[in-house]
Image (cartoon, rainbow, N blue to C red; front, side):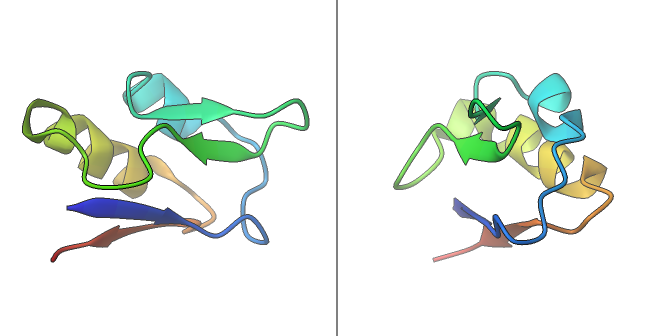
Length: 65
């Protein structure tokens, strides 16, 4: 499972980061950063999905391979 972030939709609410700080971070402008460029570690998948579901701007997408 991977997470794709759409920077053009991110408004910097930070709910994803609050939901899963091991998966998400923000840059200096408050835009979401996914800490993993490839697959999310299995033990962090539930948090990653919670972060996606928490985003009010729908800026995050789960990609299942």
